[in-house]
Image (tube, rainbow over all chains, first blue to last red; front, top):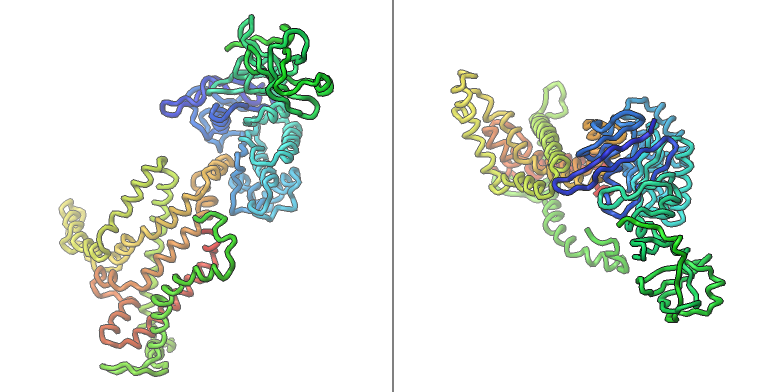
Length: 321
Length: 298
């Protein structure tokens, strides 16, 4: 049985179609990222799963039950909001225990349960603080504990890492992944960061214009982008019109040197640590290549120099438009 | 709202200089007159003259017989009791209606345009004067007024209802009508600042509409509730016109006693009464400020 299933979901506001015909399935052990630029319908899809958005067509099934007509309160899902939406007038402990209070649990009991969840996110010593007295990372952990306290069947996260600084983001990313594996429920994580999606996901769903562009593992998405949008959005791909039509060639498959015909011109050289990113003006337009730093620097090529750029036609990935 | 950088780089003394003009205005038109009232409350007086003095006679007369408990309530206490009855009733009704209207405007009206339109509709009664607004109740509520005539013609009653006008009912109705907006505005203001995602988070946690109101909206709009309450209470506590016009000059209030004393040129007695009233009002406001730190939450 699928832990979470979205079938042919469409969301319309007046005349605008925000999401159209979105379909995907997740099993309990999958971490899924909804990836796309802003306005692509990823957040609307997430909110529709949570019940905060009116679904125009389609169904949402959680744990085998159709919850499409249910209000958020009756859904076995839990949502973590982008700006965390912690209740500013309640202590950390009361924030985490809020859902339990609503369900009528006694004060001592809900405080004990909430404290248990605060321990899971290493914040038990902050239980009597107000949210405003915590750092961004701590607030985020409180939001996570609050979302998990109802033992949801699926956790929905709306850009959970976007408010954190880059280092913290990488730490929290690992914590989220570990939490998902420990709980054994699907996490659906909305992000516009390819790196985040690649690092976290078992399943990446790339969206644009309210539609799913591609579903697959990070590796599938990166190795075989389905169309021009995915290839460009995921990064690391040159989209070229070659003899075979529209194709994509990974930056790492391009060779830049002075052998053969030198009809291209180096426009930019960026040093990125393990490799160099070389930008070259060619008859196909501007192309990027990742090259080994020692080998490339040995050639003595500088910005403005003529060079040859080529790739093995075998590495071309055929794209639908 | 000022940007956070406002005032940076200014020393304490330049800040105090900037505060001087407004402090002068307050001193001239608020502190000085109030001090004058306090001073005059210790003066002596006859039918035709004020005599500068430092006596407690005015206060003694005010509380004459008030601490002989076997005599029943003295006039002053009875008047305060009656005044506070109307303060309490008005506060309850304006709070309930004001909270409801603000809740509707903020959370039920989706478009900003509609919010502004409805908000302006609320202010329409304020286009006419206070007194006209209370007087216009008279033809409606009178013995042969619209309400009584209508009820008789429908056949619900066969005698006009006497308590509609010149009664506690009409006074309370008048107050509520006049001052509900003072409750709506501050509550609307603090409710509008509540982040919508908090409401969604509460729904996500399983909260019903009532639970959201009780657990999220009321605690987060308490500064507005408190400011509105201070407005309504301080206005009603000193009122004498509404109670006079809609109470048919039959209902006692502290404001009315002061007004009558003034009309007999008993300024020191009126001043003593005013000092007591202002002190009680200040104590009430101070007590309310202790419950909610309004400054912190603005």
